[in-house]
Length: 256
Ligand code: CIR
View 1 (tube, protein in one colour):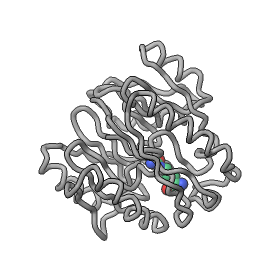
View 2 (cartoon, rainbow, N blue to C red):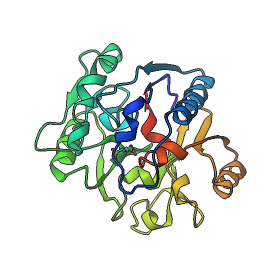
View 3 (cartoon, rainbow, N blue to C red):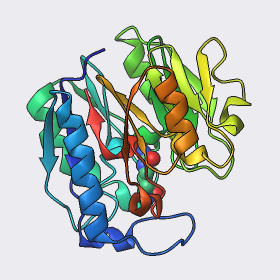
View 4 (cartoon, helix red, strand yellow):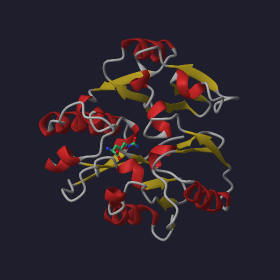
């Protein structure tokens, strides 16, 4: 599957107010901007068009655009974030989505909640993890929408204490998934080719396949080596600042 475009949003000064499960220090905007630029450059290097939206100070977590929309080839679905401080991000990104999808946009409505970080689209189905941000009403609305387009959706569990389903996994190719051992242990990837992150490198699992590249967070040499040995062209991007806000490689873009 070829991605022709991606949408990102620059981080702003308000990132210091971003949500986080645990305080491991304040994110530094200068460093985050540098990392963000490297990420955008990696996406662009594949020949894709990348739309970079301006920073949105009203929404501290708005750099994590993935949570606001699900972009499938024929339609986009506006999410309804479970984090109340993030719900307004959806209206803000909508015009950028309309520019590509026109009328082909559907939406999740109250009391449903769902965030893109809980959704993994593989070569054969859509996996959605229930989490503190994604409830069963949100999943059932999404299931109704995508089934009209011939997709099958499967409900899975996000490990306890983990923000999103995809915090712990990423798609390497249509049939291969990189996952933490704790998530794989749930059995949710049965039937797929599974690669597991080595101990202490769990945070590397939230990687993305984008055209010819696998883009992963820097600082996980054994995972990088494993992917390299599998024949992938691996790009490593510093993720220290986003990690302070529980964000990773997938959250930073919408890819379609
Ligand atoms: C949040 O808690 O919503 C943000 N600080 C991090 C969102 C990360 N998004 C993602 O994994 N898709």
